[in-house]
Image (cartoon, rainbow, N blue to C red; front, side):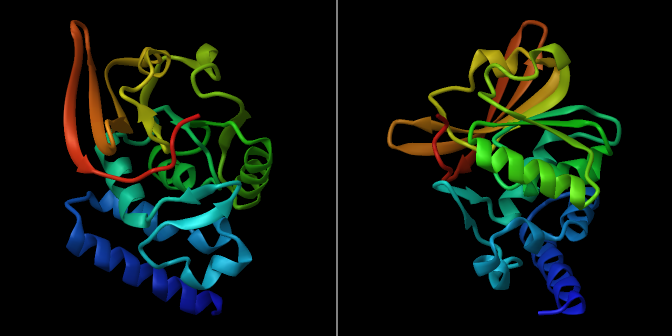
Length: 210
């Protein structure tokens, strides 16, 4: 597949997501701008624009494009907003959010050193100004708070950790998969002065938070 074929595949993907999701054009444009094939292993590149998760090594996956679009849209962010990501993985989701909020505004934590190093190099090579730290998302970037939004690419046990929610400003949002019993639900939290509003956005499947 050459560059023209990949560009056509991205356009087809965006068209399919437009039909499937109630997502903003800003989010869909971000999906269309990011070369997903650059974020997946060579063996997976032929499937890069299929709307499904793909393995990226270290028992991790990159989420399906529709899930990245949905979560990015639920954040409700715009250019200039600062966003905290927990679980860099290969860096694809961070790149999509960076397309929306602009350079220097995405801060991402990854526990697996090899994934963090590869994502940092890949994002920089592709021109994305994303700050990637190796470490536990419950501990990293505390000095960068408050953020306008945060999201998890791994399923939190029972609830989103307070250490992550507390880094989001009043009025900001947190989007995350959460394990509830034997299932996972995607939730959106809105931080209020007097507490947290919680919305359930349906069943999902993500790797567990560690």
